[in-house]
Length: 160
Image 1 (cartoon, rainbow, N blue to C red):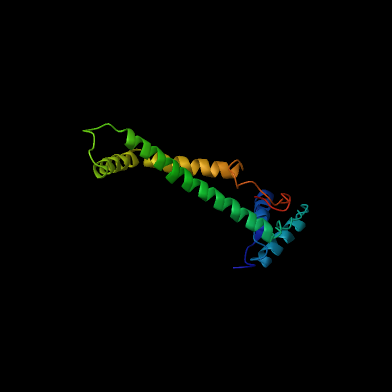
Image 2 (image 1 turned 90 degrees about the vertical axis):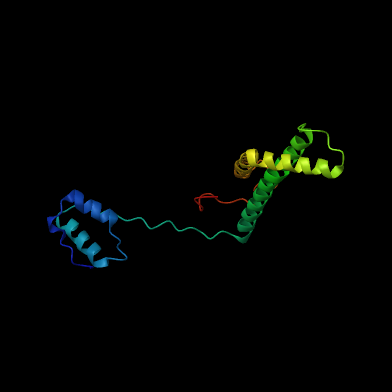
């Protein structure tokens, strides 16, 4: 409850800790009592900094970030499905297990079976590898389409 804390039994160190931790908006009477106790003891009162006010992002910055994330996701899909599919296809075409297929259907069925086996063995490597490359490439702006086009004032925004 607000205003029911007696700060007279607290040490100066405990008062300083309470001053740093009390929510003066939620408990204004406790904060006032705490400050009064500090003044009574002759301790200098600390000024409290106002919370950091962030400016809202402009529409251009939001759209630029959305574009960059979209390109990063597209690169992930390309690496995961495109590169993985090509590698699996080549690996299945080079597989020389069993007799040479006589028809296209037999060759397709054998290649599909080998491709699925390849995917079970190495699919997670392509998934997480593609994800890591896409995230890093987007973050460091090295993948096409992921470079910033809109300048952001980093003094006003903690994260860009």
